[in-house]
Length: 194
Image (tube, rainbow, N blue to C red; front, top):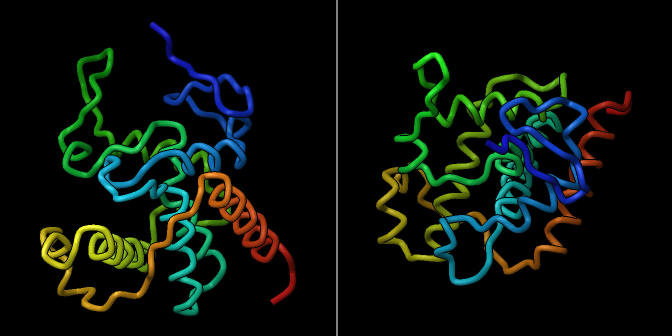
């Protein structure tokens, strides 16, 4: 059984045994720019990379520190190595281990994300990032599918106002914006400048 795949940069990666040296931000930006949100049911290609970029932008607009913005940018980065699985399926998936036990898809995603996240970031996703992610989900759902469809998610009352306009960005554009923002946030987070 094949337990590895080749990334855009040519790395041979074992997604269930990901190492720090396997991680390349160019691979993440490229892959996420080509993975479509909502299982591809958008009116145009709207990528996970663009979604993540916009989550970071929401956090920046709300005055959160650079480390929180970086968490927002990277919150779905594991999907570059294990794919995007929509929530209804993710919550039902369990991987069977050799010893007969199982682990959830979320556990696998968490393990991969732990390798990707810079050491100085919290290991658990901050609540404010989860909130920005949900705000953007509501903005996306309203933009793509209308208010009635957005109400199906059960959080529309918590996020009644549209805060983000969803534009169509090409994969190449969003990949370059994602990389630029990552490099900028890392520079600010690791420099001694305020």
